[in-house]
Length: 352
Ligand SMILES: [Zn+2]
Image (cartoon, rainbow, N blue to C red; front, side, top):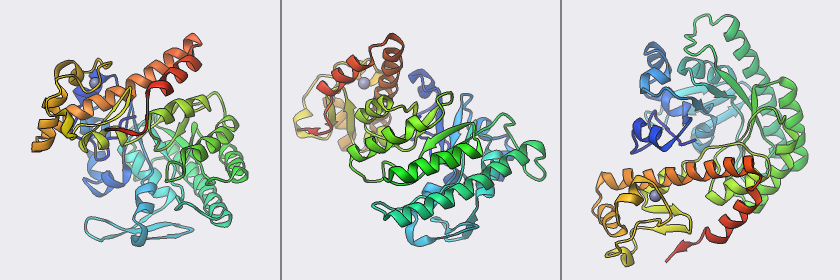
């Protein structure tokens, strides 16, 4: 899922996204709640109509952003109190409020509010947050069901909305197991694994995914939140993950970094000043079909806005195409071959 934080995937039009074959995008509840506000979006008929995107949308609960505020928030059993990063106004994000806001936005998939913790965390801290997340999940589910029966004062703009639960528990297998059992017992439409890709080394993340994913029901999608590098997609699919989101392809594009079949390519590098080859010779995207490294470097160096657009087009194509190739390989039983080939050519180390 490309990330459209504030109702737009940065530097990219919806038409571009459709042409890239993006089937779903992610919207950030925290940002949309603060600006332009959930009431305004509900009055516009919901997020799809407001932003002019007809394909599915997943919204997060807003929790991750609130917990990233560090000094500006306070967690208690009722919810997370925080000050807006915009004007310092005090807000209380409860499991019920996160459910209501997402009902107003009318995304196709809503996420429950969970407690995110800093890593590395002690076993006690991780257990406490995981158990609170379970209590919050039960409250969010109850609210969600009540809204379906009787919306009351809330404008529910998408009656077909699904709600996903989130498994927490840090890097502790026993906590992950407890979290899976508790979350599945509440009963959600599908399940996500949260609390990873927060600074732990990739092998640790892979181990937690390998432990957790097989415990989740296999008749609904499993979503790994906030991951990651292209090689992480292969490794986590191999361990049972179906859905991903990450700002990496678009954020890195704006910083001049291309993710290519051979690894990372920094377009600002002086050696590309007169390089007439495309950024990724093996790529069929509009940017690679049309423009040279020399031109893209020039656009980036002079700060042209088009640089962000063209770089993002390539990186999003690369991610979406990688996932398409993975799905195809799974159907044809050639996933292991593709995984091996990918690791032989892709490198996390920047190319000099
Ligand atoms: Zn390309």
